[in-house]
Length: 251
Length: 268
Image (tube, rainbow over all chains, first blue to last red; front, side):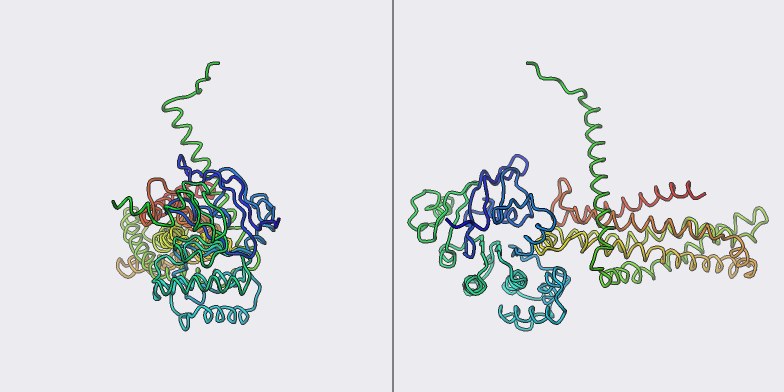
């Protein structure tokens, strides 16, 4: 069996008395797109933040190529982080920097590339993400959809091995949403990175993700390929993908 | 088996917990400060960012420092004159104004004014970066946030504040001259001769040493408050940024006065 790129083993996370993750174990396959779905507040973003090392589990282990990330030394941690990239739900762009500088930031601070090489890479990403001439503008001067694409450009500018997308399409119109999904799928195929996408976009996300994981009350209730989830008979999964919980609450 | 009761309960236990919490916070602050100093010199040097911060902390504070220095010197000139004339020693006004400014008021008031103008802005800016996940974004981009945000500000404060204090002193001495000589009639030659004869090198170096320490206090307290704004108990988001900014200004100002007393007692 293929060794997973990232493995979570019995990961628990408590915030005081509130248990957000209650023993999550999962494998992330290399070079594929994995979607994490589930209701709001079920710990999907928390899970991503554990993988990139922004949070530490209360219990359990996270392994990258079978190496526990918490036991990595400083050099290994730097190397691990340099292979990862994260697109935040709220974009997390630096509002006092121009769009160009935002995208260039990981290259300026984290690499020894020449200013000319950095400029070339940033302009290429701006062009690929259809951002045209916005490089001189500030984040507050562009639309929400553009900010999402800028955040994606920044996440992809370092050519990472693993990209974690935290609700990349929230707040976008259907056309932009499809465009972002298409971009994730296209770039994933083009660059071959491993993508982990937290999303609420059912069923659209099933078309771009090869693997689906569903979190419910801090536990994984489904893990399988996209085709399986639509035929899944687990009540929580059925209710979620049909939006039944929502309808019941309205009734 | 009976459960062993804790050695202290009630108020002593609460006091003990408070002391332990304060010690933990002091250790945390010391680590933050140590990392800030370390990254000033870590390669590659951040000369451009330090220069930008020198412009913000130093150059942009110059006007307010000159105004404060001028009026402080003028008040010292007035008060000093009416005190010294009672003893027939108004000729010593230059000495009184210059020594008071160089030894005490210059470093202290400069640091307090920089706290109010630049320190509060540092806390608010870093606090907003924190609550909008921009500091987390730095970590995901493999960028050390303390190196990126704190070290350039610390270096810039260490360079700028002693220079600002020197400006404050010079303008303050001119302020004392304006009230003492131009308004109240002390001979200008006597005023400046007393300034020159009474100031020793140790007064100047002592004042500069104070400014250096105050610079570290201002930059570290203000950046620390902003950096850990999300850890404030009972407040979140923009409210926590507001409270952190208030705490930064109050804590910096109080710490400046406390360290001033400690340094003065060693320097005298």
